[in-house]
Image 1 (cartoon, rainbow, N blue to C red):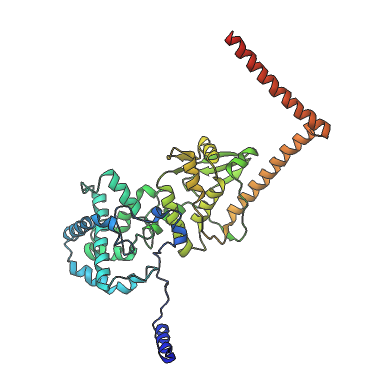
Image 2: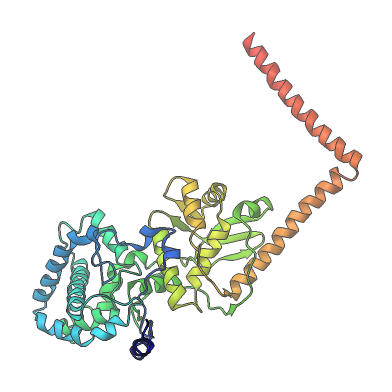
Length: 410
């Protein structure tokens, strides 16, 4: 028989020990299964784990010895004692745990070791990139690009304040020969800094957050609205006479529409495109739900591109660069960027743009229908005559082809 007093005591203990599962310090999130299942690989590191989430992934264990080597090299380079790093990380251990949305199953000792080695690896990687003194193995083009993309995955992050504090614990802040960490960070991720954003006065929670900042740079200031735009596909817009052009803006998010021309900054679809946008979108879902600018841009692309024909039109217009080669693959990757994603509002300038576009689209489509009805389909008899004329024209064309064929055969 159940002892109710024991149950009461047990539940009371649970309530007394309960803490908020996600604190204000949280900025590194585990991607929910409903989002992850659409493309598991887009959120999973390929060669190197950073932080606790993927530390025990058996496919990434080969990099552990390289990370230790890099960490040792940085400590020796800066004449830093391991003890000073350990004491600092141990003192921040609770704060570090609060940066992650999931409860971390690692003991304090294990977590301190993970943070220590991974921090040393990143700092040495940034330093060798700055100096051009690369590790022969990890600096091969394949490893270089794989590590770069692994370091921007949302689940594969360290809090940036930890890297900052450990860096200055090692090099101090008075040596003019050593660049500040934010400059080294910008140099390493320069590939994504399309608008040459200056590192001055830039703060970030982690590298995924920095990636989002790069993509937001140059975005026009706007207000948010609960209105939702109607966005036809590229093929439908093109059929109504709307043209597409690439614009000079390097900020992907700056779209414009005037004189029946939709101008879109040129973008590339390759193996990394979906990975980058999925991780920025996932970050916005949980950390920037009121400022989800990347999400709404990805949603716009999803509405515009539904089929291979949509891709082909944008490629011919110079708007899209398809490095996948196959139009169907490019369409599939683009149209699923925001599946299972929630967006509660839109930028007002986007809504205004799409309202103008939709009005023009409907007007030109109705004008085309009206012209056909007025000139060729005024009455049932005229409609039948028009159809008959088309049939006769087709039959004449076929007859001509057949005549030419007979002449060639004779």
